[in-house]
Image (cartoon, rainbow, N blue to C red; front, side, top):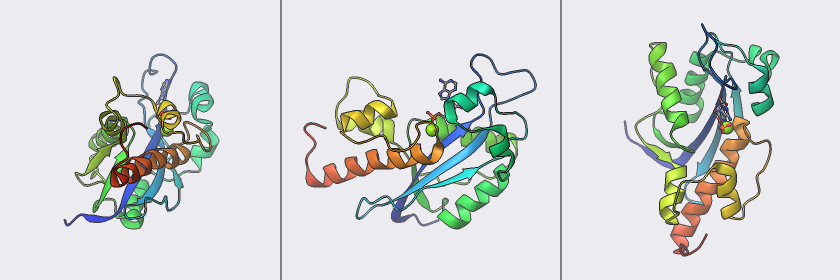
Length: 190
Ligand code: AMP
Ligand code: MG
């Protein structure tokens, strides 16, 4: 399939999680897919959307609600993981576009969840890891978390950290800054 180079789909997922160990009979599942398409030519963030996904093999712990603000009641009103993957493909042309996330967690969790349900992976094979890209662009001594990256670039942390749609928006801001700085040739210091 030909790659469309109009937008990069910046994606950030939230999943069911626990403070220590995963309870027996449960597994970590995606409960929010945050999406922020970034216009490649202008570096503008186009919008942000949250797809809430109802978990089928786990429930939202108190710890998970504290981290993400998402409650069981909220995700119970969500769509299925299969419907969410269809929305990515149909509304965002996710198979044809480059997508990006912060670190490798989102990519590996999508792979894992699709594999365990015998479902088709909703993305193509073009993925940008913004966390490693930032570290190599600025020759940082180590990769840094999203909040630290925003500070480094003098960007505000907008919305609620650990909500997929707000994380996706902020990560798209980091990627946009990298792209625009690269085009300006202003790479010496963040
Ligand atoms: P994030 O994009 O940083 O909000 O994290 C994505 C997902 O990773 C969360 O929805 C959790 O499932 C998991 N996660 C992140 N931080 C923690 C943590 N401190 N303890 C347990 N799970 C976490
Ligand atoms: Mg997040």
